[in-house]
Length: 275
Ligand SMILES: O=C(O)CCC(=O)C(=O)O
View (cartoon, rainbow, N blue to C red):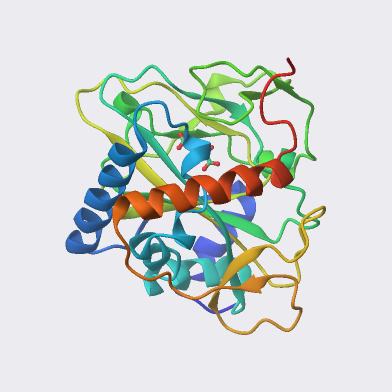
């Protein structure tokens, strides 16, 4: 495998299902992306959930530029190889003092991907630490098959269904992924992870990119939109999109909202509680 990860880092990812911290963005890139992300969240309004910020890279050039950032891709290449598709993105943002959290879960539960050749880049646009609710992981759990999850639909959960793994997590095995702004972690699609509330007076903002290899298919979604971030696509499972044009913030927010209503109904049927 190529990319910028050395063999020790690659082995560590294989053993633990997670690798962190990796410095990827410059200070200027980080503060620009963070400003843009906060402006986007402000335009969406306080009622918006994390799931409503999914796929921002299809409408916002700053988000597309994170998906195609060469230093992010150098690291991802060390895990997935030279052909890389940016399949999905979400902004996981916790405002100051926000009680919302992310219950223990495995990402693969609802994504409908037919392979584990998938990795998430969690890019810190602010500092991320235990006080503001950084990601927490249980290394090694990527070896588990997908475990049963309960959809709680809890309102203080950043996940669309409030999904929670039905397996006891041993706190002694949990590792906090502490990141400085501009650093990222990579995690495996089956790794058990979550995060706690933000108890600080600052934002905690993470931009996630779900990368896959081009052969990976998404069941129940015919040729979803995706970005060929690096290399070649010899499979044609995705409609490849270009960098979106700059447009007024309100227009981009409205277009994303419309797109997500349709996209999410296919990705995660019945995202709302019955009734
Ligand atoms: O940002 C968080 O707190 C959780 C993120 C997460 O669950 C994920 O990236 O899969």
